Length: 213
Ligand code: AMP
Image 1 (cartoon, rainbow, N blue to C red):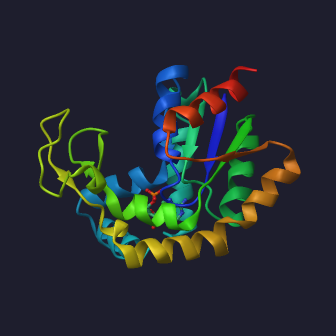
Image 2: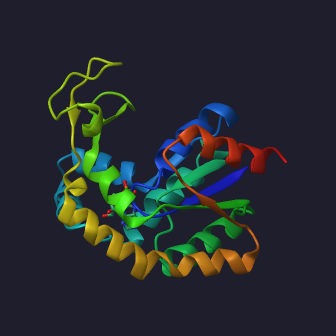
């Protein structure tokens, strides 16, 4: 089962991916996470990535594609995978097709999660991450940067690119560069349009219904 999540920053791609990992036992490939890992390694490349991400722009297609292909071709993706945050433009979508056909695979479902802009901005700017586990906190629940994580021994922090100006730019870049791939997958007949609300469980039930059909 090869699944692809499509949607603007903060639409819930990561949260839904994590629910599907548990249910279907297939790994998530998040290019954002892979890039943040590279950033954490303090290499020259990491510093370049940090700079691009801080502006809310896209990292070089070739670099992202090489990270994704390494994962997709690995043993852990034999039974399937969940792509989160890739492809983000038409060049990447077409390169993904080439990569997959070379290894006799294809995308089975493209899940497009639609959420209004103002909700996305509120979600991203309020979002807090744990530096140790997958916990996602929220300033609206009274949590703050530096608080201890309620589930692991970590500390909550805010992603640099979740600051409001950067979030607005990420949304602009999404509309300009990522939106065209919606038609690309619509034409292939594998696109599912979903409306994301405030309840991740409701959305995941809908997704699971589609996948289990
Ligand atoms: P995300 O965690 O998916 O929101 O991604 C965070 C940032 O990583 C994005 O704003 C981009 O700067 C970069 N990034 C993630 N995925 C890609 C991609 N497929 N192509 C280019 N840049 C990406």
